[in-house]
Image (cartoon, rainbow, N blue to C red; front, side):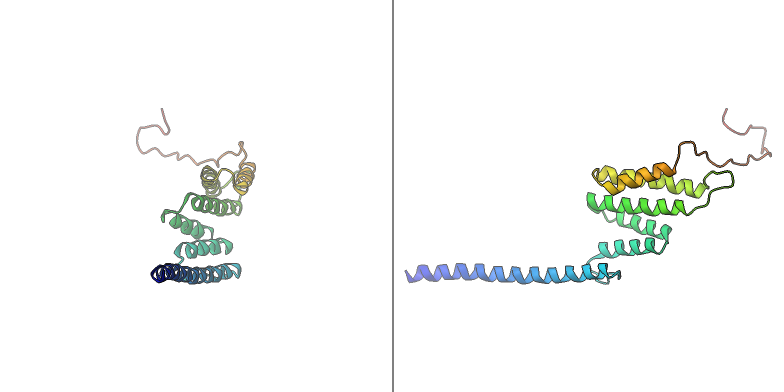
Length: 178
């Protein structure tokens, strides 16, 4: 009987010790996550090297907030190379599209009402990024809404800017396709 009680005490003691170690580890993880969340809410950069993905994401978001859209898109593109999950890829594509869309909006319109080439390119890239985001997360309402806004900005009758045809021929070959 005493032998059985000692064996039970050892088993329950080891279970108790395992539970205490697990509880301490979870408390440590919650504390780290809370520090990161406070840094994000305060608008600060994440300085902890344990979260490189979040650090890069926050840096890209900050670049977009500072209207540095080109670098924000590049930083989000670097995040795509880290093989994120499908939901993270959808968020990254959504943010890429947002930065490209706003970048296209600040471009000027030519005197004849046509878009500048940079704006047209930004819109087409934003459209592809929104569509990719929706392929990865089809129920994302914000991406659907922003894509519909983009379609309203990019009207179908918006013609490209006329290109100046060079009058000089380099040889006896005609300019253009046969």
